[in-house]
Image (cartoon, rainbow, N blue to C red; front, side):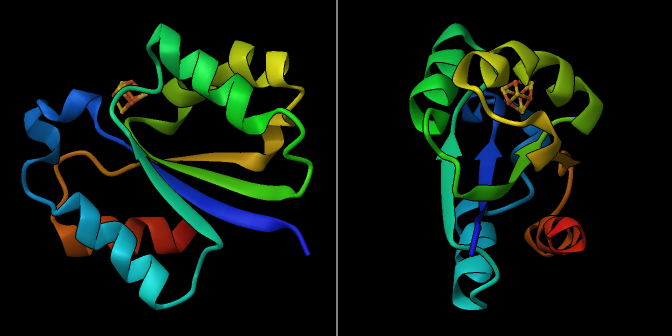
Length: 116
Ligand code: SF4
């Protein structure tokens, strides 16, 4: 069966939009409830090394069926990650972006659960 994963992207960890939540607890809850196969946190996926990260991580990741990135606006994410997904040969339809900015831990968990 294909794998489902959640990445948290947090604007370098310095943006006030992520101050109200405990990012580790958001992911730990999803792990504890066994809702996903893998999780990770990246400080800035839209930076140049974020593109490199996607290329390295997603190359050959044919078994990833769903990739949720929780961070900024989902439409913005689609634009920012498009080239890196193409370079990695990753089907962009498998990506879902969810905006969790300015949410508490519980609100972020609920927002992510809705798109899983
Ligand atoms: S992808 Fe979005 S959440 Fe991640 S660093 Fe860029 S603007 Fe921030």
